[in-house]
Image (tube, rainbow, N blue to C red; front, side):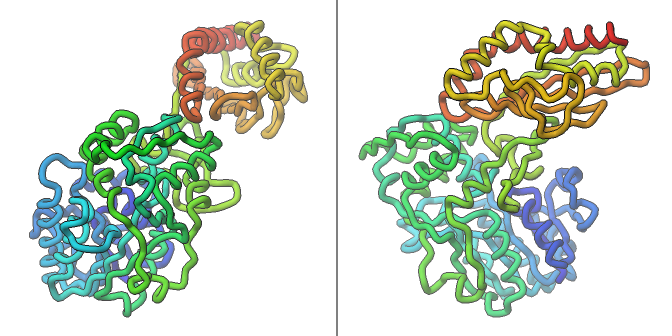
Length: 486
């Protein structure tokens, strides 16, 4: 089919496009700023046209010859009246779709049942957008979801930060009472792709959710368990209002207040799939459990050179990892220290020096401190530094190297080690070697740490002054040793 995606630069839209392409559809992306799609890997496989849902005339031509259009935009998080912007955008899209002859509109809204006056402003607006889109001649398929679990999802990142940063929380009482049915982003994408091929889905409101129905406190406990954290102490109180809670979320998470406020407001409403609207009667698909969805979303940084490149779970393949369309804060907290040194040594000599680190040669800077660190690690049940290395000069992926493990080995350009000592998080040490046109060689040393909980953050900041001195000396002495070898 020829399909259009309005909102391809957003969280869901940016992940949906490659799924539509994989299903064999021809995709046209409508974006207010098309240049934001220049860097995505599927850019050459789609059409991209400029359009703005707040300008009806800009939508008509891009929607011509389109059979189904996905409406995946919303104004939540923007300054001003987001409900009015959402209403206008939906009206413009509906009328433009009618003029262009579109056969179907697919809209992703929010769960929540009952009188609109009892819903939060966010959920009421989501439902209103669905009604506005359906108030015309083009059949609308509205999918309603609750919390979407996936790295980059605003709701999931809020959950992640609250569970990781705070060992104890004072929360509104409804955190322990309100029911929610979360769903993995991969399952959301499956349903979005499936409904355009099912004629019976047209003109229907279909609710989607995972197999688990639980409270938000339950979700935080399940996240803490999956992330290897202790169960968080949660004290419910009756006086904490959504407004106060929004400021608290804004303080301890990267979400801006304008986005945190409508999300927190929505937590007072039960968001559970109702039997009469359950999508399972039309789509035969078994969604993931919450535990599996969290496990897949907890990606581990693998390419330390590219901030948004993440490794999938070793056991499960999914599209829940951060993508170029995710916000900068997607994927959790990452601390890093970069040291760069220019040297006349050849790349080969420099790489040989770097690859010979550890073991009997030691670590070039503060060897006594490395030894003490290894001894302390051994005392708490870690591997310590007694393992040394397999060969004094040669390395291969998977080799043990003191209390590190070789993760990447690409002579003469890249060596990356993952720490196996006991630390409250995950740590890497990487060296990249680049030669310039003037015959000089650059050594780029990167230390990166993915903290776990409050202890991980305290570990980084307390040791940072010492680490920065050691890391700087290490990079400089590696370069100096390579020069002498040359």
